[in-house]
Length: 522
Figure 1 (tube, rainbow, N blue to C red):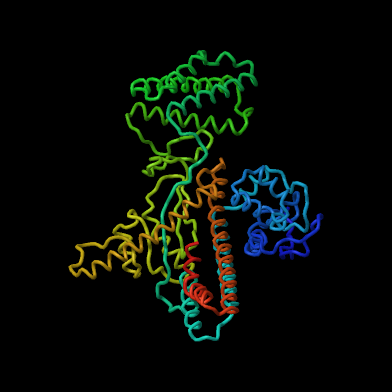
Figure 2: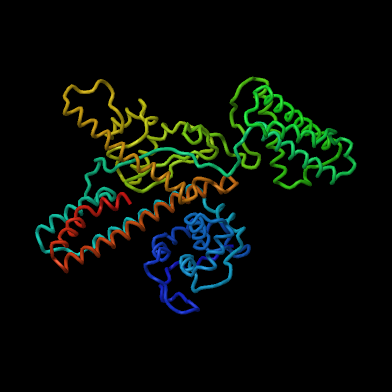
């Protein structure tokens, strides 16, 4: 059951603090409470519950705000609850009427919060946050006082025109391309150990041994079908080779075949136990899923051993996180990463998540879909697309030339004989490559600050929610930085206006022409 709450934003004066004082209106959590579209969130959140049956669910503001705090600060579920309980600003952000020292919910509820938001929902919320943020920026710019001096008016107009770099003008001609789209792909590694065939088979052997013991304990009459081999000797064979730094290929293959034989014997014993009267219903769902993964792992390793191949479709790399696949990246740090592959687009400074896939794919096929999504959001195609070499194929070139989009990369054919034209082409290519660095910066900041370097969620849906939430947080933090820099700009303008001396003219010249460049690179 869900009861709709009054999502009207509380004023700072209405928030009760038992220890006295008032909240700071410039605090980041206070600003974020005005930026998040709470009403639109509740329209998506409320239909998931029955209106009359069941215990009342947690409010949407508490559920979504807790996920935001966890992703922004990189906390665990338990630490997130502790931080909310100890911080009055976070409680104001979550819609509390006053400070409370009690835990708002049990940490296990964070798992249910993640399940209630799909990837599409979070992408739509990200678009709403960016749209509201742009409206707030336009309001701040409109509140800028006008100067009487003609030179200052000219410089102010130049600054106003540069706003078009990230906000489309209202009088922009229909059908004309506008803006810049930067795209790239990366991998978000999952929290698993580096998988090897020998390690996976040993883990599967231990798992099946545990399942056999549980079945024999629940059904004592079927113990005669228990496999008879020395488990200590099987573990010794594994450790004897696992501790070697560079074992020979022949010894490694022999150890893999030995562990595979143990696993096949255990799986046959499980079938015999079931035929003798044992039932898998006594197992918990976790062990039932691991048993299915062990069976699939046994099949895959048998194919790899006997067919003399090193690759197989849908290869398992973890018995718990069965959705994780190896992603070949070719990076200097790690040639292969294990996690979800993501395709990202940066639209005029704001990063958006376009696609999440647990299987490897060629990201070059996403360019047309991302360009169409850009047109759907902005009403026109981008003026240029900055992408890596893998995106510059024949199909994408034909599409960009048909819709009049400049695609970054070297031009086809021989270079022009005119040195001036050739130099202009090289300069344009260099500018596009520099602009493409912003998407690399998005990956860097996402992995360093917003927990994309290591996804801790084990379930596939929870991992996808964490990845989507990271990009939502990045867009919201981008808007907060822009608002802070606008505030600094306005302070500098007032200083120039009140003290029109030579030092102030230098500040005025910077504030009227160069302030937006600082905002776009923030």
